[in-house]
Length: 334
Image 1: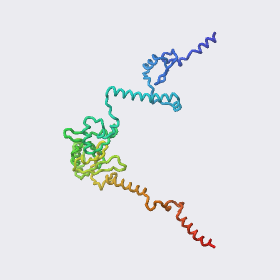
Image 2: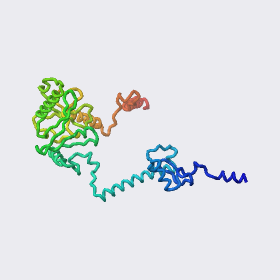
Image 3: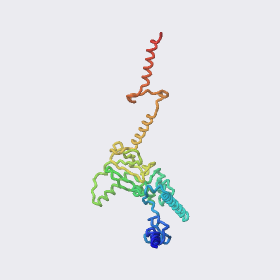
């Protein structure tokens, strides 16, 4: 009897093998989030309520490499991808049912003239840019240059107001605004007067006579292969819109106001004409290297000395063989 009673006691499941909520039934389910074992839907709901667990599998949880190629690991990845697809389909269906207009993500990277869904006021900006032939490349959303860009259409003056990055010989950029109908000389003079007014208000000292030096204005050319800044000379007496005609900008123009003419730019700067000339010279050199002389077509070129000391000179060998034949010919005649 004792043995029978003992065997009955051994058949009872351990407490750790039962449902962790009711501690009565054998568990049948496992929480995808934390792995807790439960026996029924009510116990699973109690677990989520008590432990504040949402029961959603964490796709970023660490998984051992040995578990990746197992059926469970493959099912985990498959369910994750299917879940993403279902959420996308649900979102598209919701957008279609509510009639919500969704902007194309690629419009953030397009120039204003090429965007399809323009916001209020941007249509005038796009028309002004198209009229001047200016191409504005948009910086990625969230970048500081995109945040600083406040180029807009001035309704009262009926002209475009540019955000301009001014840089002088100190190479410290300062942001300002400029009407497209203004000239660079007048705009920069007004910008310097404004800077002096702000400096006087803050009781700062600016060197006198700095604006009296002759200024040469340059537009920074973006996206170049040169390590130096490529500068485009600008006329100080024509409207700014004419200075930007057929130019490419990164969000807004960067204008250098330097006391150096284009032929005397300091190190780190190069004019556009010099930059393009260097590019043409490099292309010509590449073409000369690839060009084959017409007189050498169909003729094997003899090796040169720079081919190395161990190079075989076939022309010398042929000459030596001919001399040997000529010298041995008479001796062999009876």
